[in-house]
Length: 257
Ligand code: ZN
Ligand code: FE
Image (cartoon, rainbow, N blue to C red; front, side, top):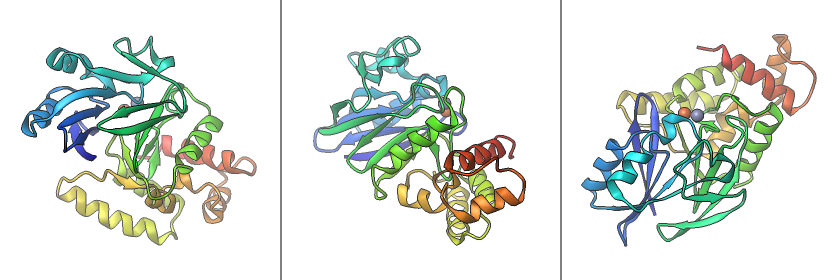
């Protein structure tokens, strides 16, 4: 399986999963149809499935046009999103499996950004939608802090060698925030230099690896004593524990620009 990153809209990423032997393709979160169709035509692929991480328009905006263009598509999404993504054809439950491009995909329900967000795990690839970003995590529109921490823990438990394919290019700003809350972490300095170089060439910072996120993403470093100490010294921490650290970080990030 090979994954192709497709920039869409202003800062969204859709992903094409391809099986080079058969030419079969699946698309994750098609924000809009035409950049996806261009890629499919250029590579002579045959699109069979669409994978939807959540119902926000910037992740599903291209699905109906793709259905019109390619006909009989399987559109996979979380069973509880049936009303919000009316064109789903395959309703998947938490821990459910299905096959695309000759590989098994496992679905994890990861509430937080929305109450019905899911991530797709296949081989060593995790498509996280807006649950995680490079060095950051999604805003909590519907879930609680506890739910989001649990959702991130589930992604972490998939193993550090997995690649993380996120839904938006927010990595540079996220790294500036990470540096503010975790200023003595040399991995953040290194990643900032690397991402700056990528972005200067207009290359995406996706995918990262879970290992990279564990080293640089404050939302995955809730046990880190330096982060907690900094938050506490700044009067941001209400009590002890991972949920409190996550809450303080998320609140600060909401107002960071
Ligand atoms: Zn979203
Ligand atoms: Fe989004």
